Image 1 (tube, chains in turn green, red):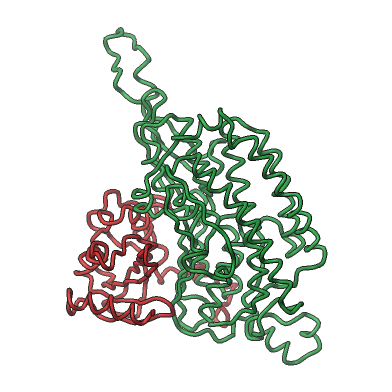
Image 2 (image 1 turned 45 degrees about the vertical axis):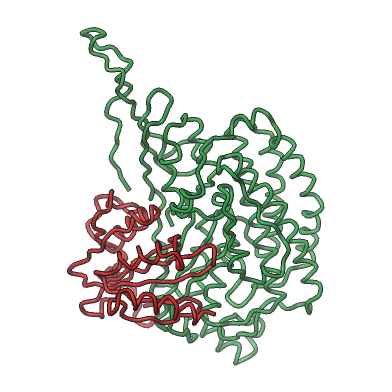
Length: 416
Length: 168
């Protein structure tokens, strides 16, 4: 993180000095600090831009303002305590991060997860994806000056957070699920909330689309704004909606299915130009696909034996509190889990999930101890944000703002 | 299928680079190859440019530190992906902490730019030829590389907190 303040000359080209106009050098550039805290960047990012009038000639990104050393902290925590760290990566879709972590540890432990749990997890993850895309797309609208869509659609995000609250008690940083399953079954109230959401959401999403999708002003503003070619995007390690907007149909859910995604029918939308409008459209279509996945998952859950919400792994899944007080075996397991005494095999494992922004991967090295020996997180934001200065070169400042919001750069995921 | 991937890539690498390939093992769903440091750039270039293998996508890379492996303390893990065929492999290379240098791979994969800066920041691995090798997440004034194992997470001089029994 650079702390150097780079404002050296403010607009030297246009200010005539005392000796007269012959001193003016019109080819000198203005240095502009966009950030670290700027209302248009939706997070703490600094970009030092070299401007020629309103056109960006060059930029330099500085990141790390909310770096919290998760990889180091994880080396001292038992596996179940690391879930809370993953909440704070992409905090717009924490449940996906949580599930990704649980699945990584389950892969290391070679646990078999019941089908019903896998479907319940799919429901949670797709709800989180919708919440994530709602934020990104409505904020693209706000940055183009269209506040209305944002205000309308955010009510639906609220409904999703109500569902999360009913499922796990938390709304934003959820810490949802446990290694081996979920901490509790979906309550009847949660199912009612999900039903209500599924009934309301299509109409509201359609309304949102009507406001923006074929809106002449919005299209003129976003088409050809911050484009990136497929080759460049791959070179820069893009994944997720941003890569798909550039025309590459890479989706972890299809390529490396986890949590039974191979049983679901859905299409992977792709764009052509990789510009802001394509990124908007890809996310928009993904919300419809997520909706259909949730409906399929609910049908599948109905066919599975009711009441199963975790695998039978007493070594890793906490027993019910009532049993801990009354049952010796449960007490022993409770103690073992809380003190991190469960046996963990030696090995290294990588598991990735399709996060809100792309391939979210956890690389884990276990030496058999109670904490990971090394944990590395492949954070999609961190990897694709380095292309940002390249993408805004030659663009207007207002387009740069729009490019950033359409890439959905989340500070938590960027800095880990 | 996984074991055949381990063998096919391993055989190709062995035929081309001989004893620069120190080991080839399967770890869960990933073939893992340990490569000698002086060959790592050539191996990555070969894997990327070979028409059959075509590992053109660098998924991630991260630094490793094993202070007990004398002479091989530091390491770097690279993870490559062949997107059309959906094949994934992992490469590792180890080197002494007294000479923590590696060739940069930003010329092969532009995305390695920030990844290498991150590993420089946290492990002090110097990537030779990197266009802009400076700290990325930590502050510039920092004088050490915090992910190395000799830096404990908590202050070792504290006496009010005894963690001998619990925690690493």
